[in-house]
Image 1 (cartoon, rainbow, N blue to C red):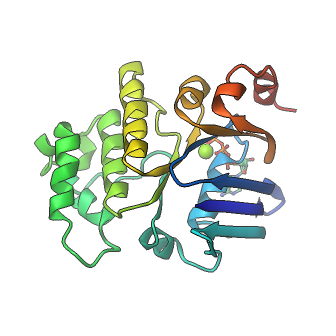
Image 2: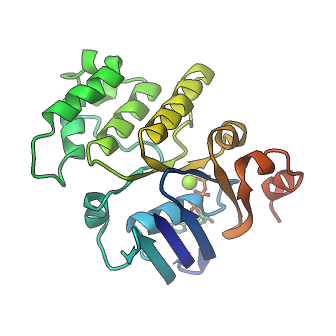
Image 3: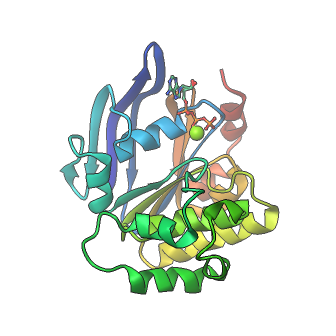
Amino acid sequence: MLEARNLSVSYGRTQAVQNMSIQVQAGEIVTVLGANGAGKTSLLKALQGVVRPATGEVLFKGASILSHSAAKRVSEGLVLVPEGRQIFVSLSVHDNLLMGAYTRKDQPEREIDAIYQRFPNLAQRRDMPASVLSGGEQQMLAIGRALLSRPSLMMLDEPSLGLSPLLVKALFSLITELNRDGLAILLVEQNTHMALATAHRAYVLELGRLVLEGKASALASDPRMAEAYLGA
Ligand SMILES: Nc1ncnc2c1ncn2[C@@H]1O[C@H](COP(=O)(O)OP(=O)(O)OP(=O)(O)O)[C@@H](O)[C@H]1O
Ligand SMILES: [Mg+2]
């Protein structure tokens, strides 16, 4: 469904992503792991079209989307829940959700109701500014907002960051549930244990390079995992 071929991202002299090739098939949860600065966010930004790759190709549903804007990619079904959530704290919870439907021409009200059913805490706070939400609720809002674009593939950048262990568990259950409902998932995580327990396949990055890939269950017990986290 999503494929990056030989993708590179540079910021000046910093090569954040070097010649990386990854794939996400329909129905999969794929996780991308790696230490701070490994290039995880840069990879997702290049896939979403927020940063322009220096080299490489991005294919979505079989066609190149390299020349498509980030907004166009969202309307085509590829959505990113960014690092740090990036919700609009001065807007109400409801208006934040409406923003998620901006690429659509039809009325999202029924789907917003479905989001409220899934996340009752958001329903109770629908008219409050998003700034009143807890970290976990903000993450639910960010995911709810992304769902309103009707994605076929959702990318999440470190969604568990800063959440309590209980909320982390709930978040990973939600990811599994969304996947069972047909959503393909590309999940960037530093919670290696939970990510490998949840994903089908995994890629491990180290200093901008892909160093390991394979079935999540196999990587969970691979001694090379620890090495990748020590860096070079
Ligand atoms: N806008 C930028 N300008 C310059 N350098 C950047 C920029 N964004 C990222 N970098 C650098 O690119 C490299 C990869 O960063 P990136 O944010 O992609 O890593 P990451 O794996 O997401 O890290 P983290 O786990 O801390 O979120 C790092 O060396 C970082 O300092
Ligand atoms: Mg990052």
